[in-house]
Image (cartoon, rainbow, N blue to C red; front, side, top):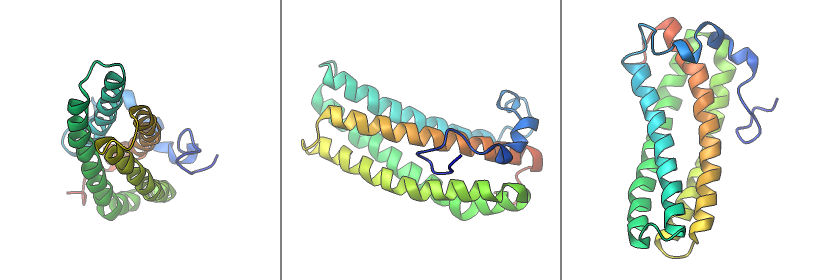
Length: 181
């Protein structure tokens, strides 16, 4: 299985070892779920919601159900929020969370390297998304083209977020949040 973001359907099984002991369906009932884990997952939910809003707005505008000026205002607001928040989120993960979490369970170092590479690959996706959004705002990009950009961006972002969750949440639930605050 390739580790590149655009070619994988999940992390390699060797990196999902803790997920067996800490499956998704049990996360919320774990005593260490509140606080950092819950906050971090809520950030991921926000990213997913922002891409959904951008896609549905583009579709509504294409169907004549959303005023083009209103759609542009929403692209500016929600697209800008997505770019800014995602960039900051990745910086914190790359420079603080990933190194600390990798030390907690050395079997998973390769997984954090994969996630870090995802972030670098996503820089290009973020730039392409920003160019497309700016094109909509300046009437240079058709809404259908922007919608396709959002769909492609969302697919890769979703793959990355799911992989990140499958790796990070079990580490925190097993080892706690020491050193992450």
